Image (tube, rainbow over all chains, first blue to last red; front, side):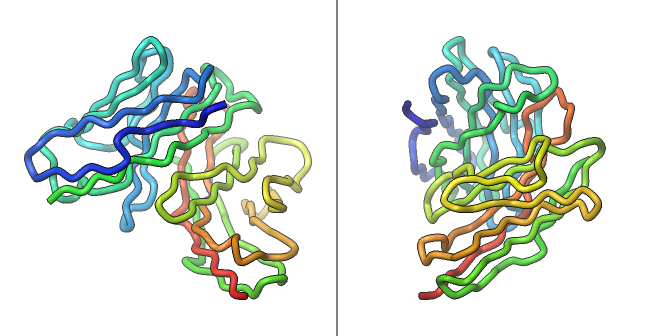
Length: 118
Length: 115
């Protein structure tokens, strides 16, 4: 079974631009989460989606947004890029479908998109 | 709010020696605990998780972790380290029960295994 795929793998943008990152979950997984990884802040949660609905959101400004499609694929968008947005953006998918977390719920991560803002 | 502490930024061991990477957590209620490993320029790979039951959890690549509720710890261990185990290791927690799948991660511990 194919793993989580993320595109593109690398991006270089300039300040003020916007960017869209894409994530395709493991087949059958309907829950998708996004995390930002930086050397200073480590891994920070961005959003969580299930069945096209945002279920949880981390403490990020409104410039960060996301969505999920009916096929469970997800995109995140960052508008008005700042230098501090340079990071590895990781997508994770899981079988979890809400409610008390079942034993099967493990998040599987993609390789990430490395965003560099100049 | 939940939190995870990995007190060591770096752990150095010689190949063939046992290794321990430490993790302590703070969460209300019962925790779900996870270990992930990250190799350079790669995403996170799942190693093991504790949900309930036996305090000793066995995972991938010969790793295991011991859950200690009284010490709120979930240390990662391996009896005999390999050079290829050198990587960045993350401990993560999710409170249980929860309406979210969100993980809270520690800062990570770099494991260096020398030949």
